[in-house]
Image (cartoon, rainbow, N blue to C red):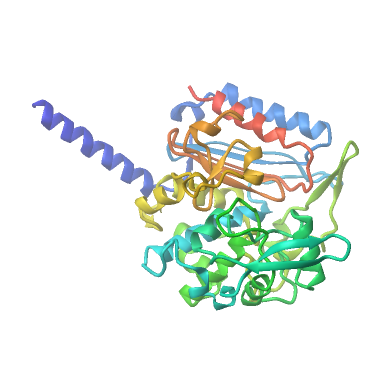
Length: 429
């Protein structure tokens, strides 16, 4: 057998193994079988124990998969501290902004159908955005303001949070203007709104800056969700169910939970700084248990289990396929996750992104060589987190994913995540 024949044989075997990996569902395996150290991973147990003992976290779940195998999946602490009810692996968590990644995937499924280009103005599809204005001056005394005409917002702007659409709770000026106009948009529940009216209401408010000028985290992905509805002629909830959740086998991910699943929704705690944890009134964050209606927050509305979301993350690691189901093309996933879009657009003001050592691709945070000074990780790792203290990331170079869930908002211990990542990457053999 000559060298050329051997090379072709090895290539064939590699391709077979890659396809076979995508054809298999996530299954548990011992850490050492996928190149991770069991002893090192035990430090996760100790880390959670420390934060639970100090009453900084109620507990939670962590799942780590490598090379298509779940090497670590544990629960810690009590989801209900008062009744001492422990977390379970099938508990349901509010994903909040981890919903954004699902909406991004939905949008790119339509992109692959040729229904839009990234630099198309959104008003071509959502006419309410045609006459958009940008904030020019603001009077703190009475919340009056002046505006100037805005440049068109593109779909790329929505995907990179550079459209100038802010959250009211992260920007006091935006909050004051929304309140003055009676136009506060709930990113979770949307009381009295539909997805369509949400977009219309936001379009009437001034942008915080010209599109493409800087990174401003906000309702951009909610508007992207409305775009998915218009282009697909389905509600966002129906599109997710039919084209993402059902094919992937994500059977416990919903905007509005069926009554049979609602008992598994875990409570949300909030930390009083230096005074420990208190449970939120369920009415505050009871949106997953509402009756389904025509409002789907593409930026924040989903609830899911740790394993369900791990399936979604593994699909992204597999470049669009999972368990024999094809969701996206591999070149599309590469487009979404491998380019520093902020740098590409000439944006130097990263805003919130500048605080965590990452930049932004099309819908995901992303680690680059330039941004690897803050925590353990690999160049090209992408992911996001959620308001209630949930996180996930996908590391293509190490063939590894992580999904971790708890429910604390606010929490004053963001350093927990950097410590967790250091333990995980320290387990690579």
